[in-house]
Length: 476
Ligand code: SF4
Ligand code: SF4
Image 1 (cartoon, helix red, strand yellow):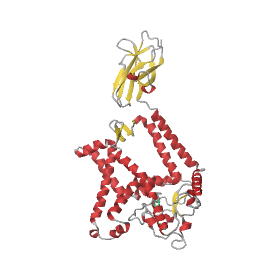
Image 2 (cartoon, protein in one colour; image 1 turned 90 degrees about the vertical axis):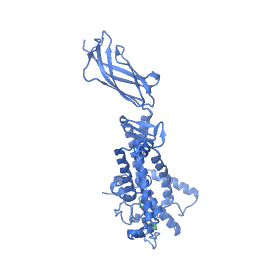
Image 3 (spheres, protein in one colour; image 1 turned 120 degrees about the vertical axis):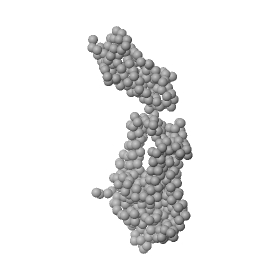
Image 4 (cartoon, helix red, strand yellow; image 1 turned 45 degrees about the vertical axis):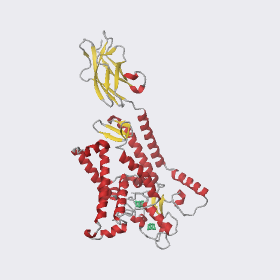
């Protein structure tokens, strides 16, 4: 199979016995992106809005709470639009710049980076850790090792707690745990999510990206000739240590969380985290050479300056020229990219469809179906009648009384015409509609039922629903 960008397969586990922590502008950007995401993840089961946690899957009531919105199983179409908007948004980002999602926002990367940070802070630098790995276990420093695993377990337990709290609410789960009132199933999921986080972040790390995540396999089909990827400038860097700018310090390999050497060419394993860019820019500054030996670039791009992605000391004319060049670069990056525009437009359309559906969703959900037992009957008063089942769902946050009216002048209700429902309640009402005596109806005709809130009678369309079905009468 041809690749738009040539891909070199390498053993991604090589040189990865210990990852060095990188620092630099892209790492700062990552922190700025992930800090609010982590806070949102951890605090969502605790913070309440409109009487419910920000994120809460209320299984007993079959409700999904998302930032004050409530969804029920019959809202699957609405949620499909949301899922499509997220998927097309991800495709657009992948087309624009490869695995930017993986490198900067994917939970697997975020948690792996957190675990690497703990490793570096407790056990010291990469060299120290590698040196220690060669010693027999009884000669290693056990306190930092214990501290590292304790902190890893702490992060894993907070993560496991948060996952389960999405189903229980943070407050309820905390009360259950502190009062030793946790059911076996909840205990199982708490342990499961905690252990999986510990294994993923501490031990598996890049193996999840390489062998378990399907996204790394199919993301190359979204790339085009202008997709930005982390790229080593071979012409500038080679031959290493001699005329080339690369001094072969191997720092770019040491910081790589997936353990690859970007100097070997583009590889599917690369998650575009830009750690190698940061560390190499640092090296270039120290040896007084222009930054950007490793940079975000697209296929056939001559220099990084043309897309404004380097920091540094590269030759630049005036500031005005630099601004113009950046504007030109953005224009170049967006021009003629049908795939990118297609994904972006589909993402926007899906998001618009979701927004419109949420905006126009009604507080009352009602369905009318005929009683399948018989076409018509003569009731206790000896009058011609038809029976129906009415399903009502009060989706509002308040209790309400709903009134049922038959719209056809020759028909009337014989069953109670009002139903009291508490908030979020679903009720099934048996409805009998009787024909006035003497019944003028001949054969089948439409019957219309209006269901409306008692306190807003006729006021507001969102508080009333018009339903229709068939009324059967014998042929005259
Ligand atoms: S960090 Fe830069 S200079 Fe050092 S080996 Fe990698 S590419 Fe070469
Ligand atoms: S090669 Fe560079 S950008 Fe790619 S995963 Fe490794 S460190 Fe991140």
